[in-house]
Amino acid sequence: MKQILLTLLIILFYSIGYSQQNFVLTSHVGIHKISINGIIYFTDSIGVKIPTNYPIFDTLIFKAEFPGSNSPIICNFKPDTIYTISMACCGSRDIIPLSKFENDSLKYWDLEKDFDKIQNQFMDKPFISIRTRKKPQDSIYAWHADAACRTEHNLISTDLWKLGVPPKCFYWNNITSIVFFKKSKINETIQEKHTGEFLGFDNIKILSNISFRLFDNERFVLIFDYENKAVKLEYE
Image (tube, rainbow, N blue to C red; front, side):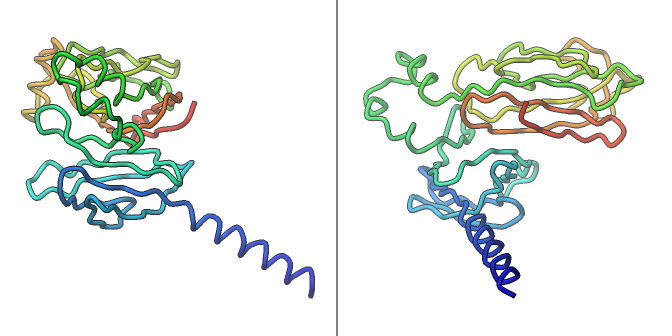
């Protein structure tokens, strides 16, 4: 009986410990409606405490009112850490650890003159590698989808393609998107047409994509499953 009671207490202890894995998300740009792991939150300058799946990844969605803006963003929010939503270049949003955002130097830096300093302050540098789950029958490409500069696209297979730290021509934001596609006979969507033209292909078929905001300078692997048209993010 004592052994059973001890086992139950241990389970309860770990359950409580796990449930206390929270982070805080604030906003420097008004009230934001967001979804974290399927649960809706409203956050402002005061912030809201949110459970994290860490070290498993969390899924964030900005619940904007206009269509096409509710794409999921994979994040690795850390327990006991405060993050803030801020505006980046050209109306885009970013998520920054509050410790980086509350830097007195930012009050005096000019966006153009001190661009390098701002970029070094805000930009995290995760190292990204990409591969397929199985050897593909078709020629599959992965593209770091950043139209601000001529970013790389590459054929991928079961061997790692080491994209490295996703390059940013300037501080846009820390959210990175990778698009998986193959050559096709026709473009079925406007997005395929524009992407193909940008990358120098006549016609492409977009197979899948993933967006992520990864904090700190860790190493990650994207694994593309061609059969299910799905992408999995893992720590390397």
